[in-house]
Image (cartoon, rainbow, N blue to C red):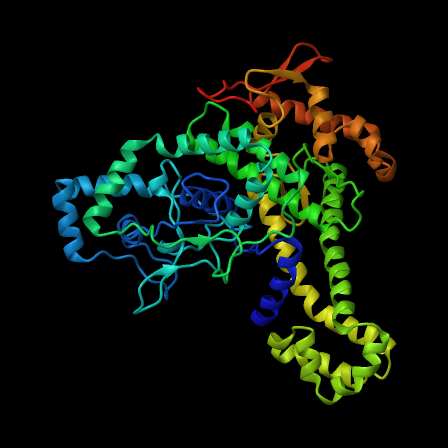
Length: 519
């Protein structure tokens, strides 16, 4: 299966970028992005970046941590401990510091709410200071630790490129984002000083001599790549990011909002890249009643399925194009079919299926039965498509579901399908990117803005405009109850003030951070 996955990841990278990984969690996307940004010295126009290894620092923080019977356990050398105790004054103080850092670990959970299995070299801390940003390592018995690019630096690099492209024509916006991130990640200087002392005692070196590429160059074998470098979507992402960054809140609360925002943006990107027809309008019907109404829940699940169908159809469409491009026209197939049947590996190489191993047999057996162009474009096409499509769909849908869960945008109840929901963090994020600090707008204008900007369907007006009301055949009262439930959620979060049944205002309660200007 791994070889099939290798093949499918190359194909999906051409649609969404090189490349997203289905095992990544929402917080890791943000941490990766922050690592890249820190490694460029907070520059959104960099060609490459440095990586912070911090191997001994992590061994100190996570010493004794165990996951699984075969996993490596973090352990410092006795000499390192002796030097550390001397530098920090005493052993008790060292343990207090270790406990402080362990309490900063970012909790990661899987799709069922259980703690994600991460070794000590793959664990992360809340980025209260830039010194707590470090890249995942690969640790093999008997070998020195090395960087694990295969997993860690994927989504974060791609998100960096999106914000880079989205600020290319707006240098003022770019400067605001760069400056604000630098301010947030350097202001807890006391943490930085403690980390410096620990790393100095343990012998951690600063790896600033190696630069990892963010763009293609003569020397770069592996680099992040997006299939498009210019998009109105990227421009919107940069503006939304700056809106959240402009709030006068601490780094810890900011991090939670950044997780929701980044997941929401990446999910929108993947949906948009899945559209075959540019004019198609993506819709999200949100279950604001939290599964308490079966009809509302089912309708929300249906829109979730419809958007997943976009992804499946994109695979089918893209593979169809790729297949016909690789085999050539009817004349080319007639010329080469006999040769392909005599030497099936030649056809396998053309299709880039060399790594499929056992699954190649189905392709080769079907090829042997093909006698015409029609056989190749029907029977053989169907077999090759079936061989790769399951893996493609499984991985890409898994990525989107993870983004939905971790961003607070979607989830599933036991025994039911995925549906769109709004957690408190996601709801706050929506308000902060649509209502400026210390400003208010009417509730009706707010949900209208969500519909016009993102295709969010909440209540009666949006249901009628989108055609969902007519299509669903639900009584209009269902949509009215759904809208009232959202209104109540906003009120409980301190984001809505009711003046009467007819008048309610959405309010962004935060101040603008000092020195920040809304661009």
